[in-house]
Image 1: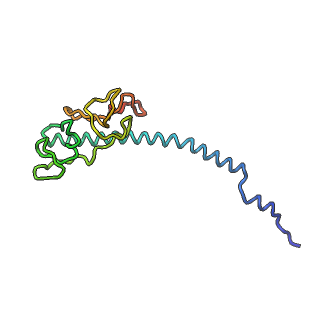
Image 2 (image 1 turned 45 degrees about the vertical axis):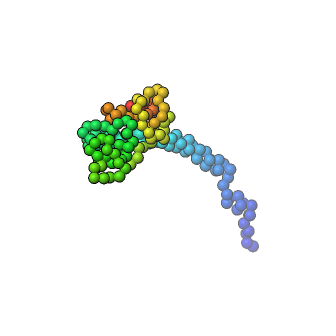
Length: 167
């Protein structure tokens, strides 16, 4: 006489119990509770690093412009064109294409967009120094000193409490 397996017992052993599924869901929830805040802090840190990098690139471009133009920085009204076009020995001799007289530049491919703050996403320049109420334009530019700063309000700071407009 052969023994036949109990079919009801075989069916129970093939799946997961409700307790096992609940434990898996709880573990996934704990991992998510730990990982999500860390990822959001990482995104903020990336924006802070992008700001520092963009400022470094623009400041270097302005310094190179000044070296090639006898120590003069571009005029505030011409800052975009001065950094994005070819220029000649004269500071106002700008052209979109390189010619025999336009031998310098371009210094940037594009004006970067501000990666942080209320003016996030704006790439233009303003001649108004960043304050508590500045709006419009992604960057502040001082044509006398060649200084470039983020056009952010004083209250907009990084995780360490440093205002973006002082980077």
